[in-house]
Length: 419
Image (cartoon, rainbow, N blue to C red):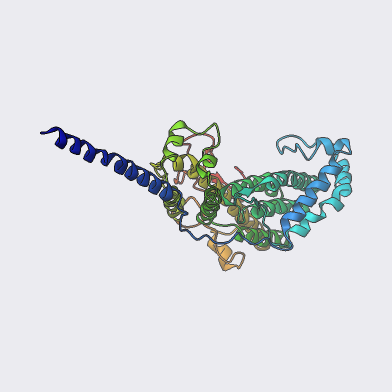
């Protein structure tokens, strides 16, 4: 090869360098454009804030009751720390006098329960703000104090009414509030449900019927777990879209020292669309699973996407909490109708179907832990045994041995025995 030919070849190869750089640049630029492409997803609008909104009345009651509570020694030590396992502090007369003092400030609670409720507030980024929901625990503790005080004075119908106010308050927290709102509502309802059980066997037949009718209406307000998780999915999608509208969206999603370095590394090579698709796919799988009876649901394997696996909480435990909550409410409803039946028929029914025949219930409540059907029931002398088969899905004959704090525990949830 001559010198001239060699130089021509060298010059020829020099043209490949800028061409290669151009291709690399265009490829990188295309990758960035693809990563930053706005996902094509249409979400429903935010739920409208009802007017009037029950949440506003609850928050007003919270502020007024707290303001009054700090003014007296009985207020400072009582309803903020009520424990049903501890003996009642102060005399019944002192407690009733304190209730009379607080009565004007508690009226917004009853006013609230006339209206629809939206507890959560939505931030500009589309995420949920539960600041108001946390205040409602204090309102529930006041209602617990109120229910216990009425019961101690033998005012059983008033005690039941206050307890049902607490269960109603818990149900209000679950509306359009996603998973966290539901868990807050379940915890709030549990605060006063114990006291409701103390009142059941002291009610007259009309009082028991009225309480059952009200409880049935409250239970009808609660969403299914599938609906709750669907709201959770939409809320998170809305948040992602808001964050992804920022030019530095990856930095915003990467904020937080607790994020695993593996997750951070994976996120750098994810597009907006792929992140949303992976999250949506995982949530759709979870929602489909929750539409099955509880006993047939199985925990899904963790998402292969590290980022999605980190932001998708473990839903199985939350589902169990909701099923417990449903079982407690339905057992209480059934116990109220059994009380009315006994007073009007001089004995308990031979079976739960008799409650339908006699018109005490439009339908028997399902046992949330069973494949199908209602609770187990049998007469035992002059009493009855009513129970759910519990999360283990097995009928243990009404043996109250289930402890939700222990893994793989067995046993049944007995009416009036485990709340």
